[in-house]
Length: 313
Image 1 (tube, rainbow, N blue to C red):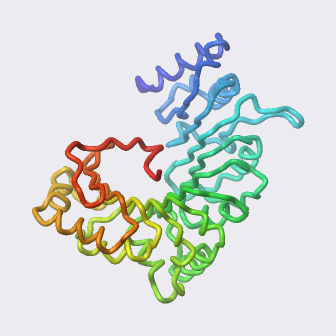
Image 2: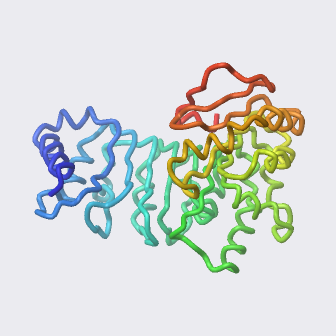
């Protein structure tokens, strides 16, 4: 067993034997490390999660062992003992989790949902009624957006969820026509996905995103190529530019400096403000939670810290 695995076993065993301590846990990440001796089990993990009665955030980044249903369950007529505000399933791989919808039915106060797994059905609109932030790919958008008032959308593309070209085009077209997109005020999206929505084949796939006020673009393209983007969003107030570090060599601070710290940056930022009269802020990522910010075309002297949960506000 790894050191991390041993630490998890000790931590969970302490919670199991002292339930009052479990009530202090607000955020919990499912163990991800090897547990070859078998002392860490899903039975232990799920038992302890049910004792975390004040749990607000539950995160699955990787699974320490296979499980047909790795979610906390309760008997019929029994209420689950916690109500989450954030639920994240970001496990890599092409897999389906049929139990996720059943688990979401127990969460009535959820505000943030990230799912990377395949769903066998849409998520009915009466489930998680307070949801306002959605994080996932086009499949999740089609499954969860209808009937909801989502205001923040992290539109992702997962490499392990590749579609055949024709099927991807069909589902992207369907997503772009959803009326609920008009309620989006904060949008994070890659340049590649945005370009597909620009395409003539989608019959102006951006037309339902006209109310976006905060736009985060992940791209390694030159600043000059982003000017036309701001023109597509008439209500835009804040434009965030984040290099796509998954597609550039390390160390990426050097790449950031090369792309976004050139002598021409001030004139390029000025062009963004000129192209979008409603624009107030331009934020350019420089590392971690730090951004260079221009406010109404004036560079703010100090770097700005933007917490993850405030990114699209």
